[in-house]
Every structure is written in C-alpha cells, then in structure tokens.
Length: 387
Image 1 (cartoon, rainbow, N blue to C red):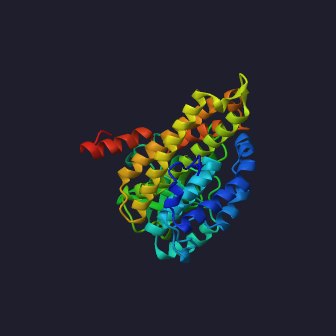
Image 2 (image 1 turned 120 degrees about the horizontal axis):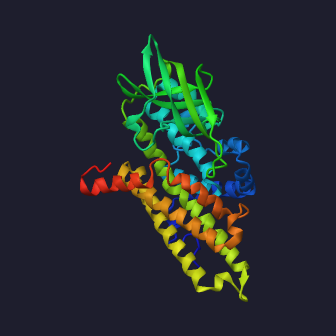
Image 3 (image 1 turned 45 degrees about the horizontal axis):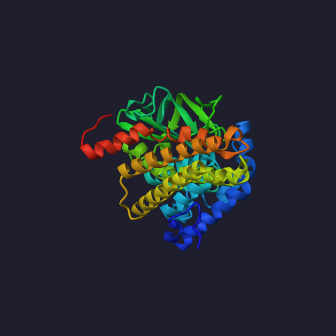
C-alpha cells in the first residue's frame, strides 16, 4: 500500500479512535470553513470573527477542561491535533484558540477561585467571552521578571498601572489576564474591558499574523476588585505555567502549516510544466520535498511523544522548549522553500506558503524566541544558566 504523503510513518495509527475523530472533525472544519476565506482575511488584515461560534460549537475552546466548566474533557494529544489542524488553515486562527484556551481559560481554572471558574469559563468555552493574556511589555518580552506593570492595594481593591505589548486578541477581548508586580510578588488579575482606565489599541502595519488581532494594552490607574485577583498563585511560576501550556500547543501547530505547504507544493509541481516535463519530475524538486517529509515526520513523532508525556503528567518544560524550537524551525524553513519552489506564483497569497512563512516569523518568536528555547536546552545539558 502507498504511504500517505503527509504521514510517512503512519503516526495516525498511534492515535486512539477518539483522537482520530477529533483530528478529522477539525480538519473538515479547516477545509470547509477556513481555507476558502483565510487568504482574503490575510490580505484584508481581518480576523474571521464569524468563525468563533463554530469553533466554540465544536468544543475547541478549553477542550481539555472539565465539562462542568464548559470543557470537552479531551486529552492533550487531542488538543495538539486541534492546534495542528487549525494552523494548517492559518497561524492566526490557532493563535486565537491557543490564547483563549491555554493562556486565559487555563489560568482561571488552575489559579482562580471556584467563583471565578464558574463566572468566566462556561461563557469562554461558548465563545461568548473572549480573553487575552497580558505578560509581554514594550521594553522586551524575553525577561518577564523585569516587568514594569504594577498593582498596589487600595482598600479592598487594586490600582493597576502599566502597559502590555503584542497581545493576541487584545481588541477582541472582553477580559484580559494581566500579570503585574505587587508588594507580594507577581500576581494575576482578570481585567474587564469596561474598567475605567483600561484601553486597547490595535497594532497596525503587520506583515505577519495579518488574519489575527494584535494589540497594545494600557492601564491608567485601573481599579481592579480583589474578587478579580487570581488567588492561587504568586510569582513567575504563574505566567510561566500558562506559557508552558501554550507552547505545548505551538509544537503541534507548525506541523499543520508545514503540511499545508507540502500539499500545495506537491500539487503545483505536478501541474507546472517546465522544459517539457512537470517540475515534480526533477531531482531537485523531489529531493526538496522528500526532505520536507523527513522533517515533518520527525516533528510529528516529537509532538506525539510530548503529548503522551503530558497526558501521563510527566512532561518537563525543557522538553517543550526542544519541540517548540525544532518544530517552528522545521515549519518556517519548509514554508520558505515551498515559496521558492512555486517560483513567482509563490509570492502571492493565492498560494499558502508565503502566508505561512510570514506567520511563522511570529510563531518562531512569540512564547519564547528560538534563542531562548536553545538556552533552556543548553541549561538542562550543562547545569549553567547562560541567560
């Protein structure tokens, strides 16, 4: 039997029946609802908000959370497959779901009170309340301990001042999970969009993640009730725990982008005739695409094992760093090379590789740059912190 061109090691056979069903459902959604419109959304710099109810209806927001909070109680391999299939459509769509699930719903579930869980999570799972995650600041994102945003007690409330930058979903969001320095360490707050002094500003002129909302957040003496403080975590372990959740999903997402690029290059190279034969009949094209398949296969196995470790409760942050580094680098290189194989046609958004290549410039940077993840692995190997 012929092997599947995007699954040369039959990784799908290692999935459970439920995991395969999840992948098939999201793949169908991406094929039928995302791909027909996403190129135009990218051109227009518009996030397809009309898809949010459908994404929520499929149970993709907070998918791993308990049903009592609106979750689908899926395992983390299934969540990874959701990320892979959404990013096969576009990184902006996967970013939306990743921020909502891993960076907003997760901290409320893990660090919030029961009252906060019941107040926010069911509506977030239903797509009725959208969240954003405020950690990165204008002066630099790789050193979160150096944050300037601060919150001070004022009676029963907190007064929040500062700013956050490069915030996915910022201007879509009804709430922001904001991390700030306090006299008792870094703490998290649920800031509601109608709080006086809180504003969001869309970041324009982007050449990446154009089908995504990216914003700057500003806090000018914002009064936040104590009831909106996340009570069950203090220090950097709070936001870093959220980032580990999101980075896990990001290890899967770029696999989808790379598969989309390989798929397009395969189809194009069979139809494009140069020197009386298809481009696919040349050694150079076959060697390129074979190499992409090799790298995609390695990434698939890496993320699957990472998912199994996470589902068993044994995943370590260094393992996430290794997979994020490897898989983002894999995908951005394939996207660039696929753009080249398509020749002049490859520079238009009528074909996906240039869009994926531009998006992956952000994906390889956010949630820890490639260099940061290399240094995390280096620290694990040597026992020496080189940051």
